[in-house]
Image (tube, rainbow, N blue to C red):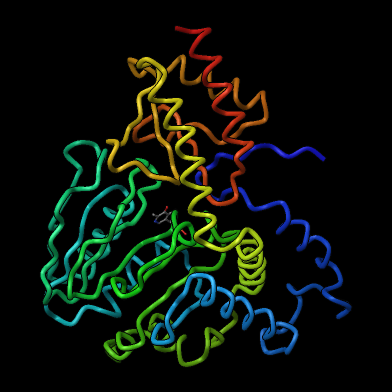
Length: 360
Ligand SMILES: *Cc1c(COP(=O)(O)O)cnc(C)c1O
């Protein structure tokens, strides 16, 4: 067996231990004579998986009891629409625009014709930083941020303080550091970056927000519907939830989320040091104080597209894939989520250093 180092932004690397555990039980799940994928979502066999995934998530991420965990479908993108549908109360919503994903969320607010304001944006500088001193109005219906900007490689170091319900799209940094839940009211994420394969969408929502939704909102699109049925209102993405549960077990085996945070800091530091110590051969996209620990976006000097393509190709030949930058900024992007090993980063750094020497 040979496995590549997968630096892709999403769907992204999954820990080998998780894949192997799933493989072991794929055809005959713990003596049940069938796969978990074939089991009824009303069976005890599946219910144990569902309940354990939720309980482990609550334990590891230290989610307080007054928050509901929901397993939905539709991807993080569906939440761009569901958030205003469920939280807007006829007042005002406020958004911070820190990249393409925030912009897409804002587009959905526009479509729903709600009263909203973009109170901070780094668009003018090609989203290379998180705006300083973001101040949401305390009386806003909700305040919206994207904690990690997957494309531009920027990340909030602390969440803005506000009395308004704070909504966070954490699709690309969920489970990578401990969260102070007293500052967060709704967090959502597609699973495919840091929590398993695509298919399940995680929503963590303060229970007191569930009652806001109007009965004009279709049943399936109400958080309340899913909360009342423990995310078994209809068929949930059972295999994705199973894999999410295995990922939670893996996080526990790594020492929990604090331990992962430490590892993530060390991993990102190696890569940023390689950029900073390259005498200008590599140039990071994000300003230093906004640098993401999950996505490292960079260019080669003079945005030399030929050299950038050459490095991506060389990396691929050496078993490091997924490094081509997003089309909106070009260059390279190394996505180094929880599942990326230190060895993977070390291999990439060695290659980058050699490449800079050979091409400078
Ligand atoms: C990937 C990503 C999304 C989109 O997720 P889907 O599950 O594909 O809809 C949204 N927000 C952020 C921050 C992302 O990284």
